[in-house]
Length: 452
Image (tube, rainbow, N blue to C red; front, side):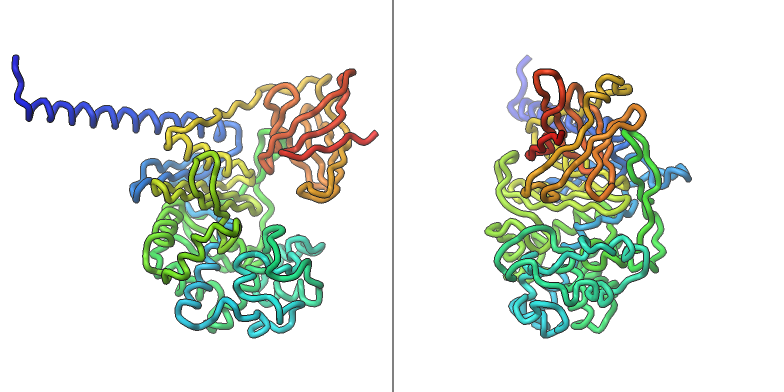
């Protein structure tokens, strides 16, 4: 039977649509299967969202917002987002600059004269985390800071009188929590409002973020997830409570995954910021700035903007790929940095790129393997903790990394001599001598020699 040209075109469109739908269903199934391993192993509980060209193509909640109360996470559950909060603080400063209220090249001494280097450090240095300020998170009394209500002023007191770590504006060394505490104080001084209220007026309201805000210890927010911490290799326990005001400006915000996607869309494409301010965020000449990490990503073969966060009970990750307008948001109420790996792999799944399906070994580690996998290892000055001695110890049928601070990270067995640090989600591998004894511990890209 002869068919008209129009009917043939119609059939091709229908078949093409069915093929696209099948491909979409296959991609969603792959994402579900991938995430299932993390949920079942107790390493992810939260919400994952993927948006492509302003359309949400995947959004799903996993696990519990309150494990004791058996309250499941929902797509509208709010999570503390830790260091991703810096993006909101930076945007508030840029909004003030756009209004002519401040200049980014002003010295911070104009607002807070009592800190070392106040006549050298500019607001721009703070935004780019190149201030050289001593880090409040590294102060010996920081755990105590988190157990009491704080203000932006009280946080700055903890670094007053302490010398700069390096000449302002010369380099980025590590995340500068104190820089964003100081930005929060500047925002308060310029607006005459509390940091929480100033952020509402400058960022959350104009950007349409109806489910986001700042936790100043006095918020009573519905649908807020409780935070949990790893316990051993696969267990979970409630995270130690903290006063989120102790992280004012650098990690005190909360959000939903939906608000995160809206935030990225509005930040990069709307006119809520002037072209000058938006271009400053987009500028990839410096890898770190304005609460973002940015630059060419080898895995995706394109420019990427991303950030992760980690604070007691919570981890988070956001990725934006301008080429293809792809956003991935991963918010979790488990204190495990798996969210970064999850975010990159989920992006790969939806971009039809290669990814590694997680495979966590099951069952107890044998007594022989436990005995042959312990020891103390010396790392070099370039390690995450310079010149750290890391002890691998056995407890029952589990292996742990003990850090110089005394904190312990459980090691998830991957098979043979390969493990994952459950807290920081880095691969750990033993190197052995001819007799089978450990001679080195490889942590991420660093190698620690065994101490005899």
